[in-house]
Figure 1 (spheres, helix red, strand yellow):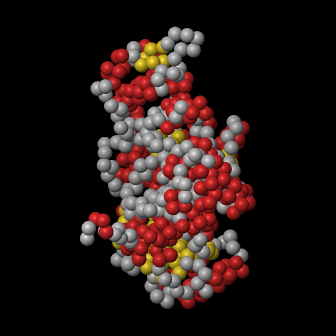
Figure 2 (cartoon, rainbow, N blue to C red):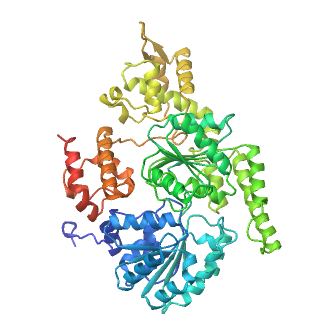
Figure 3 (cartoon, one colour):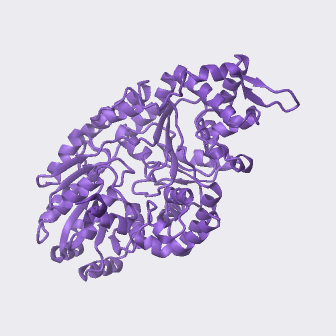
Length: 604
């Protein structure tokens, strides 16, 4: 067949992916998992937080006959995903403790009539007579078990209710396809998942634990509160989660942040259910920037535009740390994960592990074994903080994955280890920026550009679209200013005369820079193409108003990543809008006219 008449064959799964979710291609591992489930084979999928696990069971559910059950302990995830599916035109329901008995009965009755393709259910609900009566008669073709590491005592969140799932599956009128999914699992946990859930000859997919868009840092500041306040204030408009080990620390830190002008709320088990729900909604619906929380918060929170996660205290395990840190950057944009380490926090963690837990009937030997396991995990977490080696490589090694390079260049250890190389690169980048801006600015403005400070004056000249814009956002401004002063002293830059001296490059810099290139990967590098900032702002304002009318979190209308892609491509019609990642047919139909109207103001 000639090239002129060749036809590109698109798989049914890929067509459904675009139709329902607005994505033109699968993320790594998704296609293999989806197609294996559709072939009728059981699956164990280990995919990092933010890699799109939900697509792996939602897409087959929409393509398979009958009903799909998604077993999850996460009430927040159920609510958010049912809302997101509804926004995409897909009817789904959840059954958990937040519903009344009558609401549960109504949901199951509707499901029996085929009104729902997907039903989310808590594992504790599976053995209740009412739900069993429904499930034994229903046409259930697929069961997806989310957070499947909970079945293993070696997982970081063991739940006894997960041990009952295998018995529930055997009671169904025909055995469905079963998929177990989790974000973190060592080889021992994978083995437990397959055996304890009785997966039938499962295909095991481990897509890799690496999240390239995340910066990992371990810091030891003298004053954690001052560090956090400075960190947040240097990231205006960014949303983040701060994890604390105790309710007391959560309360005190949130109070300090609010006192210092940070829009923050707190979340822990000591608050009433109404207080927790209000705090969570304020964060998810973008009514506040920061949530300070114990690990009671976050499981199942699908908020995509979390730009940073800070651990105020050391987590009890690498699994817990990686899952919590992984809540940053779920929209595919770069994000930061910083752990504030201190010896005192290690003693606090040991105390928390030794605290009595469980009922008085708990087997003493079992309790001691659990403590030994948890202390072993904590020891490895401490080792990660103190290693001095590449944090990313050490995390991946813990999960049995070898990092392909000597270091990632995007963690605090690599940045410190490569300090000399980084310094040369920083000098080269600073001089290049001075050249590009034509020597029109003094030190302050150059530092602002490198730090990514937004201003109409810089945007008007297009400097916010430069490669160098924001490239040193993780560095203190004072340290960048010191490097510029050193370059002036060493003759690479010079000051002009006048009351407000500007800085320009010298012949020496031009001659030496011709022989050098900036080191790639030794510091965070922003995307080369930047969105129209004014268009982004207007699209987000429209999104907030639309979300408020619909009673949805803004990211469910469209994500931050989709907003940025629209502001870069500036589609002028629905056909062009459908090419944007995250715009499904339903969303184009629902929001397309409004989006095109807004974009049109910026295309004339």
